[in-house]
Image 1 (cartoon, rainbow, N blue to C red):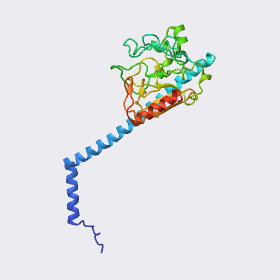
Image 2 (image 1 turned 120 degrees about the vertical axis):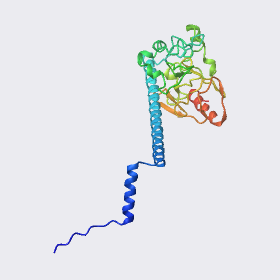
Image 3 (image 1 turned 60 degrees about the vertical axis):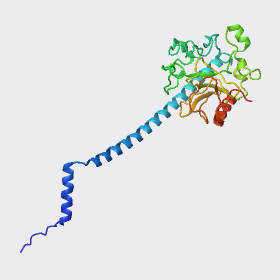
Image 4 (image 1 turned 45 degrees about the vertical axis):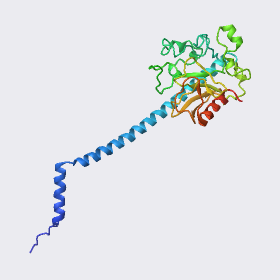
Length: 280
């Protein structure tokens, strides 16, 4: 005689629990559950945005370093074409960079701040005709607009002395560092600091950028100031052709012209910059 197969019977408590689960699935999530899910999504989105922002900032810093490298290549090529003479870094009376200089114009002048013509007129432009290498990719506004240039050249690199000032009607800037540190005129004169330590181009503070001349005094005052756009750091290049990002110890904002040194960290930052211009 055949027996009916035994059916596994579900206990009453388990059956009730299953029914409640089915009923809850049909009814949807509770308000608290929805709020928890939304909070988790918000946290994950915030973490993702933070990671994307860091990645974007890193990419901009790398691009800025590449810009410095490209300008340095132009700078070296110019010297190679002119018997190792450095491209002039002169200022015309009134504040604009001289038409004989590596770059022309003054980005604080409303008719010049966004005009690429002043890049084209510079002595380095024929060596690389990209406008982008003159400007940091990290957004920075000067008087509400994005200037065509945020990069300047160390004033000791072929700044004008009295002879150049008389011959070309430019400002004599040799007094900024004094007679012990005259402007370098040829690559062969760059011995102290050595080429690997001698500053050429840097990304300048949006509050001090004007002509193409970056002035450093051997005092406790920042005449011109580097930027802090790259995670409290700036991009710089050097006479041997390499570029670096320098993180600052005390600088936390883009400073104004002739800002005083505040605190030990800024004193270290300024000394480091001074050593890249004139070994003391």
